[in-house]
Image 1 (cartoon, rainbow, N blue to C red):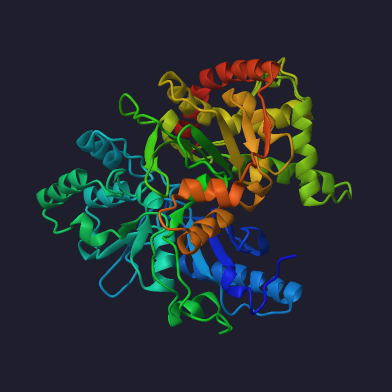
Image 2 (image 1 turned 120 degrees about the horizontal axis):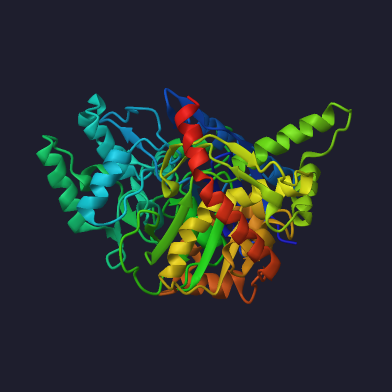
Length: 529
């Protein structure tokens, strides 16, 4: 069994990802297998109409999950963590973190979940002839300009959450290519921000009477495998206040959860794709050719090494499922029945497989936040049923799971019409933990084989650890695609399920009802304020 010892410490790698509901740290060995992990649960807050996390919570969570990992290493292997071979930082993509010349935060962190930049996103998409989603960093910046927010003139640095944490730990203002492509369009040939579009944006700022230049306030773009600085003394104390962790550890470029999801599922080659399913959901398809035109429903981003990727992103996924599960578990508790949380989830998810293929006339909308794909700026969770609908537990669970996939399906239909070739999709994230449920129902919804690897539960923290390992352990000229295929995954394809005809047909019927009922969701948003 691999261990963390004084002799093997330099052959381990630490990956940390700040997700929407959990911060997770994973320590892997030289065979890329997990040795220990730590986690910290957290939640975003809606403050003055903006979804945000405080930076104090960022550091509280990072220190807590690292401490839990270090305690597990001490307990299992009898050694404190003093050194590792490399570190990688990842976080939820997009958003808006801006700082002044003294490093002071100018406004609260505006996360990906906000749908408050419609005007800016539309104007930039028209200017660039490139889809700029509302959650992208550049949309948040331009919306602040349009709103004439006083902080704009004081901006000296704009970054994402991953970029911010990385800069505090290393002193380097850099960003990975995949994460960068969720800030501003990236040129896959140069693996840098698109210079022509950057020039257009700078001219837009000049016309507005501002001295903002994108290349001066945005971080430097680095491709996977490029060195991205080392842990400073200050960074070591920030991450590990106990003082045991030593400075000087090399870092890989900070990445977003989309990039780490691609890496964790070995989906960085053409015709491969993955689905990351948690609080939000997104499907990433590595393209063999460009799409025929711009689609507002499709984001064009890149892999961590710069390949073009079509991304279907939906703001809402498991939040509504989680809320219903909490309600049902609370109801069971009224009768003195205390069921383990994981067992309760497993049982309720499995019950969905017994439901009517088309959910028995039930329909649900899981919109906690807005969904640009369906043109909604806000969300209202909504459950609707026909008077003669078959309301039972199995149909109910199947409905709330199918509803989570509805918006994703609308986006994926566009790629199907574009004749995007896809051999299979690989799933990861908490949604796929219950064996045979999320995987089978997702295959039915998208009518494509869906695979899940044993490592799927490790998620993005493992993915960023792999990118850190690639940075320090790759051979001369070895591409990320080859490194993952040859040294990490080998012949492992995980468990792949084929879509079943009755479930595919059932989901199609459900989607007819779901699409027709979107007007009810729009009415709820308009009426319930």
